Length: 263
Image (cartoon, rainbow, N blue to C red; front, top):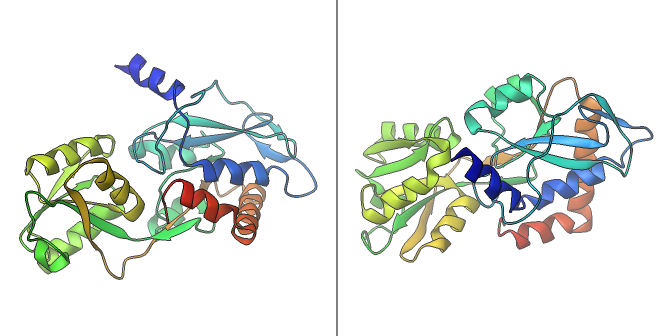
């Protein structure tokens, strides 16, 4: 199974192409080289199980070990390292990567652990239902008493806890982060009534399967998504923030968002 997963990664290219562009631009920022774990590379921690942010389609996949070195301007290369959501924040704390990338919401708790870029996207949480099995559900109020699927240790899980406490939903079914497809299978089968995810992921998953549709967004719960760094990497963080600002200004960020349907 491990070999199959690795082979799949080697055949695919991350859909979070916007971040590759950001990192490439960041490498040209400033007047001198940026210190990175591996000379000429930006070692990026991620996980390939959460489309469209960590979705993969074709490419070269994982590469070798990191070692200390300087990252000369205009010559840095993004080196994506597949890991697990459950460990990625701690691994970044332990300096396994130069940064971590994905559909990661910036929260006060996570800000205590790591430094974060300015958000490259602020989105919402959305709920996907099976329109064929539950045609009467059209909004958040219709989900009262429903069983909602979420991934463990996520902001959607936190939101679901609050919704259950308020009586907006009936129960929560928790799935390991890398088993989102199982949640969608359960939704198709009618084992759960809805799945909650950040809006771009919810829209992507709903579009993949006939009958599934997004029925509601969770109000007053914005989800700012950012790139995480060690707190001892202020120059790299500043370079990435500069690149993000430049991409917003010249329209290239919006082009990438449209390409990967993350508006």
